[in-house]
Length: 204
Image (tube, rainbow, N blue to C red; front, side, top):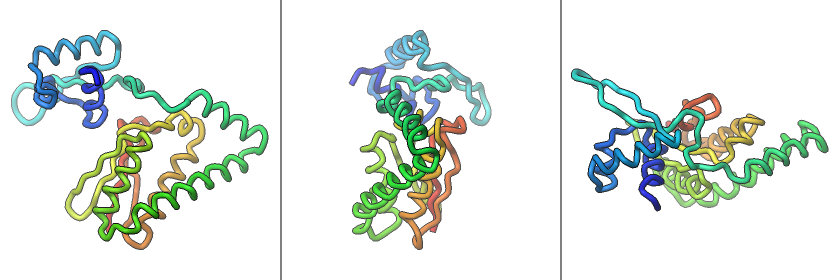
């Protein structure tokens, strides 16, 4: 993987980062990282912003350009949009809803099988994050006090979700069904609404 691709991945997963942080993560010099960041800025993939943390001067951070996938392409975007239009023309909105429900049911069976052997909420969240990453969502997880976070840093079906937000509703309902009787799931950040990622809070 090229250094610029590694930088884009880190920014996608973590949000705005300093050149110093990137240099430490990539085991490069700060000057070397800055050269790569400059190339990414010239190609309109990243921009800078100054972020203040406590006292002192704000520090220079780099982040992905708003509404720019930064090399993270949606899967078969054009074909997906054409298929959505075709389903609506042939089967109507009800037909599209049935299609989405079937996708949700298929995913539920797949995920349940993977999670059924996991005894704790933490184990289930970790496994779900792994499954979602395999599907292209760049998912990570974290633990915060009495609850967990499932963070999806990329949406491989973003174009479809923008066109039909039932996909997003379906995915939230899918997660809620997976943790039914074990934990409550709510979405606090949403890519479709302009957030950097989709964030799901999972709490018993």
